[in-house]
Structures are given as C-alpha cells and as structure tokens.
Amino acid sequence: MNECSVVLMGNAVSDVHRHTTSKGDVMARFRLVVHERRYDRTLERYVEAEPSYFNVVAWRQTAENVLASVRRGDPVVVSGRLRVREWKADDGRIKTSGEVSVQGIGHDLSRGRSAFSRAPQTESRGQQLLSTDAA
Image (cartoon, rainbow, N blue to C red; front, top):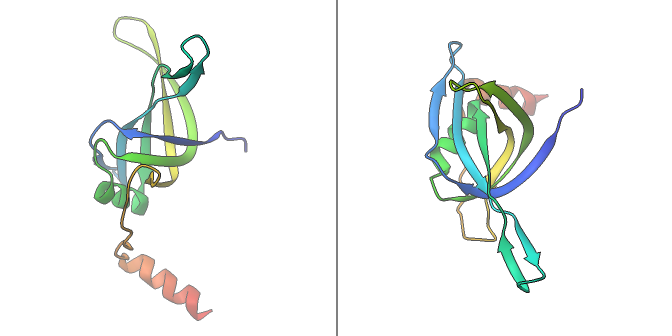
C-alpha cells in the first residue's frame, strides 16, 4: 500500500473538537497552519510565504490525549498520513483541503516547554498490557 507520510510544524488555529462515531470511537479534529519561511534575495532577509492550512484528525486514545493537551495557538509537530480531498462547493466550484491522520503529535519544544504525563489506561488497554507483559 502506498501512502503519503508527512511531518508538519505549525500552530493549532482552532479549538480541538471531539466527535464520537456510531461505533463509539473517539475522534479529535483541529486546524493547523504552517508558515513557510524562505530567504528573499532582493530584500536580503527571510520572509513568510503563503500559509498552508490542514485539517488534523486523531483517533481513539490519541484523540483523547490531543483533547487533553492541545489548545488553539499551541505550536505542534504532527506526523501522519496526508490525504487531499476534493469536493464541489454550493457555488459549483471545486474545493480542495489537506487532511492529516495523526500517527504522532506533540508540542514543538523549540518554541516552548511542555510537561509530559502518561494518559490513564483504559481497562481493556490495561488488560492487554498485562497479558503482553506476562508472556
């Protein structure tokens, strides 16, 4: 299977929203902005290029951790699978958006400090860890 893996460094520009599927899976979703910087030789300095916006989606325990940890404005590093979606808007124009399904996420520690704490284990996850440790 081919997939497009990416690592994005940017800022959360929306609150994290919680959704629950009909099967009971938790999903967290927020918008991320990435500002590319490039050197402009005519100005002889770095300038910011057009920002790129992405939808970021996390599932299950990762979603719970994102909901508890990420706030609007936070600098984050997201790694995951990129999908580009196209749809037809009400006015008939074709729109596109990039969506990253999270494989790993954390605060960008080059821009601040963060304190790590382990997430509480769910009962089924705890049982799985105990049975794996016993083997």
